[in-house]
Amino acid sequence: MRVQLSGANYLSLAEVQVFGTASTPAPIPVFGTGVDGAGNLLADGTADGHYSLVASADAGFPGPSALVINSTAFPIPPWVADGPKSKWIGPQRDQSSGNAPGNYTYRTQFSLAGFDPTTAILTGQFAADDGATMRLNGAQVAVTGSGFSAFTPFTISSGFVAGTNTLDFVVLNGGSSPNPTGLRVDSRARRTAGTSTTPAATTSSSRPMPPARRSWTMR
Ligand SMILES: [Ca+2]
Image 1: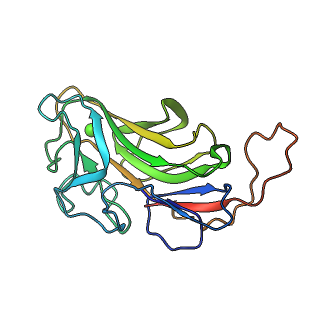
Image 2: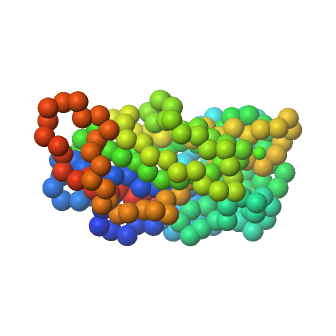
């Protein structure tokens, strides 16, 4: 995913809105699933360079590579179709028979160096088979998604830290025998390019209201 201050039209998976000390918008890399460093869709079977499978329930596919799943074969559909901004990733490219049931943790990292982490907002959408919970820097985010046929939107406005931030998607593959599993992170259809003026979620201090947040786009 790529996070950036607003203004540019990044294809992306998610959006982050942030304002920081910089007076000039600056790009901050945060990417979604299944894209290269320029935000272009990766070919099926390619290892995602931005997401690692750091925990796996399938001994035969322990990670850390997370591969772009075959786009034109079951389970796509019924999974949300690939593109235009992201693709499904999983422990292996062929999910017709899938992987063992259990938890699979996909991890991506991004840096907020140079910005005030308390002002960051990350928005986006994701889908998972069978479902997923999100963790930002180890803390569970209060949003869960249970579907693979539609995206679940998310907004994170707290829990960011200075420097490197770690975003985990813990995907639970249900069932009692191997079956399809995967993760998809995408930009939100309602991406508004940083026009939000919503203040920080917690403004208990006496600091003056910060300026309007600028948008970061995750791709
Ligand atoms: Ca499944």
